[in-house]
Amino acid sequence: MSVVNISHIEQLNMKEAAALAFAEFGPGFVFVSTPVEFVIAEYSNSGITISDSVAEQCFSARYFSPQGEVRWELTSGSTGDCVVVSESEFKSISAQSTIDISGTIKHSYLCWGEVTSVDNGWSRIKSGRTSVVSIPVNADIGDEIELQTRELLAVSKEADGNTYVVDELIIGFSKVNG
Image (cartoon, rainbow, N blue to C red; front, side, top):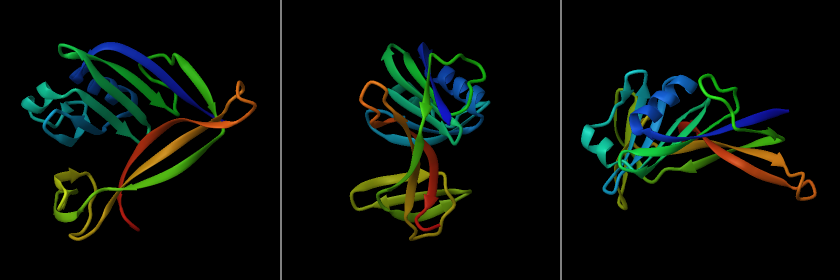
């Protein structure tokens, strides 16, 4: 049986959250939400590959890699709170809770649009209902892209042994049927 480790950390700025994600999971990707745009970017030991204006407007960032996630939400000024979730032991922080996992379910979510161009391993998708979004997956023009996730399941001791979803972690992106 595996476990999921969860920790909550308060009052980090967005760059500190990126450093935490890198310390825990190595390089990965981040969903960045601002009032005017949604961006997918890379994070590494040198930070996040977004402009300063996007960083200043960010109210939510979800750092992810196959090893786990750091979810940051702005709470006041330029700081926010993080939740760190991983099936592996934490490296730089301690787990505040550990839940036994009874199983997992893999999911795929179709991204709106199709690939209109590809540049250096990033595919740009667009539809008639969405603006262009760059996604970190190598695909061909016309391909459809899906977001890959993994639901973590546990058995509730308080609810007569019923199974429930503990969390859903983002794994990454892939071509549909690819």
